Image 1: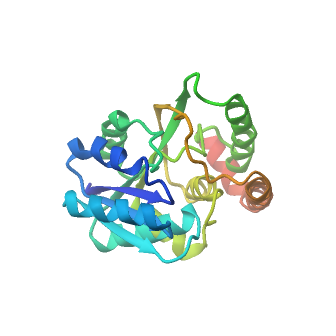
Image 2 (image 1 turned 90 degrees about the vertical axis):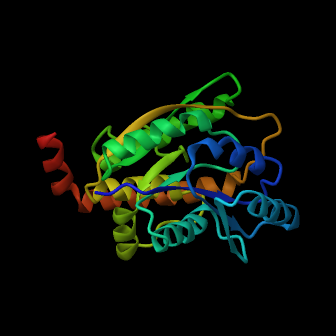
Length: 246
């Protein structure tokens, strides 16, 4: 499999951090697609300035906010149309450590058919509720896949092989908002895509912007895991056979 990667960043109203994220990635010498998910005027202005200043950055815009998954779906299509084979996903809020990006790319180069997942290492800046709350998702995902191959399904720092992603989108519509990262990882695993986990330090910046809506998004996650557990039951013979062979 060939290896022609790009960087893919979904953004929604992160005008204060996006320039720093882009500048931190300059040394990778990779094209960067930024998908603006219906941001307000300040972020649009910041992105216009970045696109004019950095010729390796291409900004695509959704007219309305549809959620991270909607932005990523557009980004996947744009990356494929431009001939890229892999997309290194990073968030626009500055939490992801760009110094770790070469390790994700090296892992993808060595295992081009695999989904390269970030396995977070949190420092003291991480809220305790975030760290402990992740374990609920971990347990659900391990049940849904009948494996421990996905070490963290919530981290948005990852590298996608685009051919398996395109195949998945031909089969099913992946959730558009906060459920996106978890759902696409589980469904790619169901489709037999190998999982490779790369440790990465995650920093919660003071006053950082979050788009997580406590009631709406927690209800969405409950619905997602209910759906995925039912999906696991339908796939149980195949997943169990895969587990025996592992």
